[in-house]
Amino acid sequence: MRLVIGGASQGKLDYVLRRYGLEEKNVMDGNTGDMVDIDHKVFYAFEAWFKRQLKAGGRPEDAADVLLSSLPELIVICDEVGSGIVPVEPFEREFRERLGRYLIKLAEQSQSVERVFCGIGQKIK
Image (cartoon, rainbow, N blue to C red; front, side, top):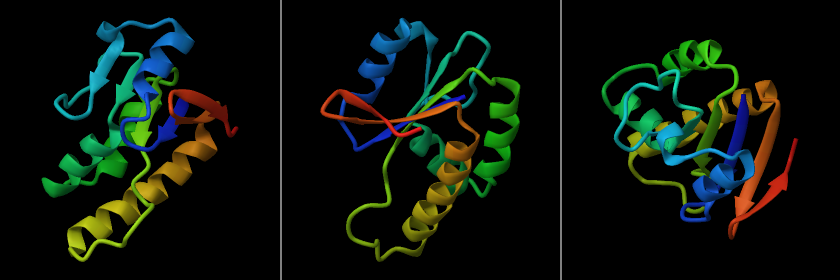
């Protein structure tokens, strides 16, 4: 697995498609999709999927563990959500905390971790 992080609208998806020679058909969009299948090489907007799972009362960490263990070559793209002002709403604080902790776990398990800023990738791991 590979992890690509960065701020919103920083060109993470375009960067991944170029760098790894992939196409849009290889992307599962976490904003709208619920399941990654074998044709998907990229899990885009992981944070949106995680948030939807959490809002539905699920444990996104468990669902992601199962999914990621079955697709070890998947590239996970996730917006950084922990910077800035701490949200007033309890759900938003819980979401940020849980996603941040899960990303720590993903980073530890990932073959590589890259941060994209202004469309430029920076290798972290």
